[in-house]
Image 1 (cartoon, helix red, strand yellow):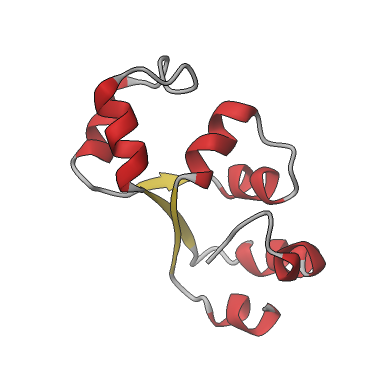
Image 2 (cartoon, helix red, strand yellow):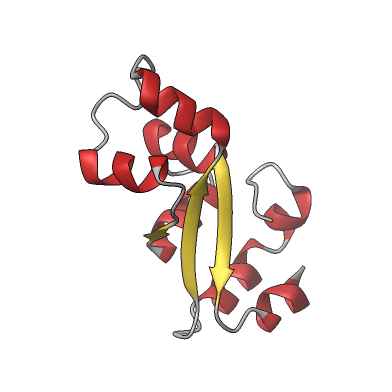
Length: 105
């Protein structure tokens, strides 16, 4: 659903940020198969220092709640390389009242 490279996202970023501020909305990250494989192999330098509890959650194919600020920074290109790589290799899921997000896009 979200990608910093999507022109619709960049065009509507202020409206998306405003809609995501709804307190009923939670944001989850679910890793891709590629990311899970890289985590299990342990050979990607961007993933080496990831906390073990996060790795466990990802390898169990569970989602992890992420802060809205992290998503905002990723979408506007200001998130650090390591976390940007992680978010680019999975799926962002919005849980809660997402009708505002659909209206923005």
